Length: 263
Length: 265
Ligand SMILES: Nc1ncnc2c1ncn2[C@@H]1O[C@H](COP(=O)(O)OP(=O)(O)OP(=O)(O)O)[C@@H](O)[C@H]1O
Ligand SMILES: [Mg+2]
Image (cartoon, rainbow over all chains, first blue to last red; front, side, top):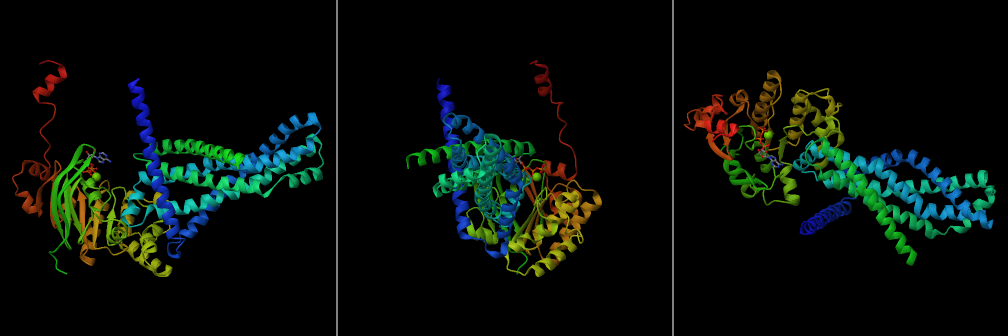
């Protein structure tokens, strides 16, 4: 019993300590973002643009594919319930609202975690193992400013950008399904979509995705910097980065959904 | 600038990993313009010492005064400024794997100066030429051999024209010709630019070639500082063995040890 209590206590302490270190990393990053908004000479602005293109392009194909499938699934699933009341035109409403508020931000965040969150951890972890981070330090180059800031800015922009694409494709998936499978005319579907959406849905979806981007980047970076030892550690850190990040994304999603349920 | 004034003073340095004391009261000074070699057995804490000197490891106690600044307490902008005036070559080169050789060498210039891109290109070219890597600027570090990586590391460490440079085992694991080339390069840097060099090594060959003075590290302490001739006259038994390459007393013949193996006694 005491052993259990001890273990729980240690675990809590570890968690608190990790939380503290992550927060100090957050503070450092934000300070660096605020202090050097792409001061030209170090061309870090270009690095941010490159990272943005990379995060976006790496995840777009798979996000497109999955969003289409999810759109189809939501449409079929809602049709199953709605047809009992002959209210199939409301498929459009259900697809649009779930896509914008929940599914598009969530799917995009999870896929970007797998594609780019993992890559961030692997890159920084490898640099840690090869003493590249130490080399930066000794050259008087702040690793936070040099490595983290561009990735952070890129990630916080890339997740919402890809999310918007995902939203469109999900709605399209719903449209195809209701036209070809359920038999709701396309015009009716689109009308219904436009009518049922409010700006609020888009705002909620995008706000979430910004927070998802923050979480993905920070977990990726933090796990990367944590790597000590050899290449095996990089692999372990990468796996743990993806798991932690997905967990956090879903947690954040829950918090938002609860919040907007009451507000 | 006077040749004998100290550029680096280390006083009573203690470094611990957890409860294990690796450096236990290390003191020595480095004079401006000299090549000081730090000699010591494998695992004697040479890399640890170098990493502490450049501020990557915080010592448990002791003082390190580098170019008039106390490294152990310095932080923020002052530390960054000090670091632009020194260079370090890592045991494993530590070139950034995502950048080409030329970009690696140019990195400190891009980050710390407002020079035109064309000027940076020229300066990078000069350094690469000096270390014998002209024409390899567009290669990625993964496309270079170990010796080439070390030389690229030297080019990067010297591109800001530092006042002092730290080398960790610059010629370890290289063939004798390449190793000799690196030794000559270290000498050349010192003679051409008056660059103070602190070199960690255990290759006696290179010590003879490059060292002005030698600092011997054993058991976490400095057991001797001076020219190689002076050290060879020392009575310290370990120093004698190290310099004349005699093995330790053969392990395993100790009767107590044998008894402990067989479980008798
Ligand atoms: N990060 C670390 N954590 C704990 N112990 C360490 C760490 N780094 C080094 N040590 C220990 O400190 C001692 C000195 O290590 P160091 O790497 O400084 O030796 P060295 O003299 O450079 O050896 P070599 O000649 O093999 O490079 C070793 O016994 C090592 O086990
Ligand atoms: Mg070493």
